[in-house]
Length: 202
Image (cartoon, rainbow, N blue to C red):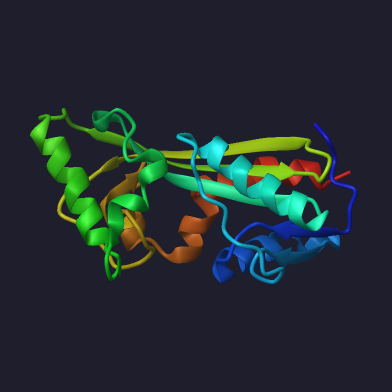
């Protein structure tokens, strides 16, 4: 595994919350964090069919454009009873002409499980893939997954996306009912972060 020896990292995102989360994580290492938005980078088209493929597109595009090492992530939910769908299309299922509607997306997921008479428990995983790319083309990949099951009806108004129908293993509440900070400690992203941190240490 290549260690990160640079003092500046570009996070290939236009999401301010995600940038703050990653900057906070890296603060002990004395690394200056900038974002794709700060650098006025366009969002590249995500044309791959896997999380790692799309994360690689974003990381390498940002590293190539700026000459800085770049970190990107791609994440979503995979539902076993739907052969892994929506997967990389997790956000696409929520797209409407007026913005994203995750109630619609969650309803679609449950309706499709009902249509195929999927057995209970209806297992699913939230997945996160980080790619750290250098301008010379090298990259390192870090993946995290949080297993759980889907429940119906939706429960809770915390979190976002599919959180109100996802009950993580070992809990009797959904991500939508869970305190945000507690969720952040056990989430798929937290698990990928734990692996990512290894490249910044000694």
